[in-house]
Image 1 (spheres, rainbow, N blue to C red):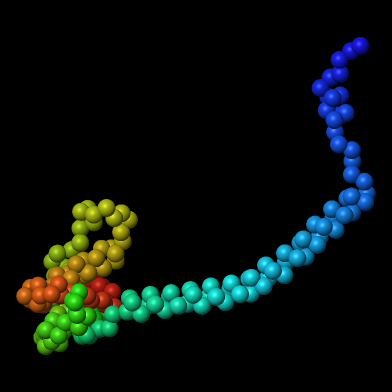
Image 2 (cartoon, rainbow, N blue to C red):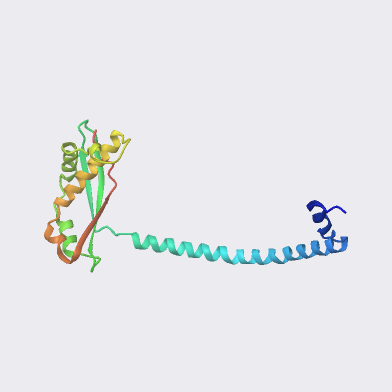
Length: 186
């Protein structure tokens, strides 16, 4: 007598094909489970979407409120470029400290400071002390980019010069500023 091959043993051990009745019951059960799952998922989705949307809006509104700094002083800036183009823009300042969001002494100084000619001073400094791309890791800068960085550096220096260190040293005082100036130099 010869020994059966592995293929013959596997064929002989295979389960019998399910009857048509068993296959129909399995198909009905699967369909019922799918029908049962679908409405729950849709109901959960109907609750989840509005709740998630309201939560996201609340977080966004909170972030906007937290990051909004009210300007204490708005300074008009104007200057004329070497090509004769007149430029106007503004700088906004907010003053405060870690202990008091309203630093009255610094705000009073910013409001009382004589800002006349500050735009031309910034412009002249930007031309005299241009940003040098070779001293940074930035690559592929256009001349407009370099001019903007020169303007920004000059503006920071001139605004820092406008505030006495004695006002910045008390109670961890700070001031922040923003500007809509493009920094056109030519």
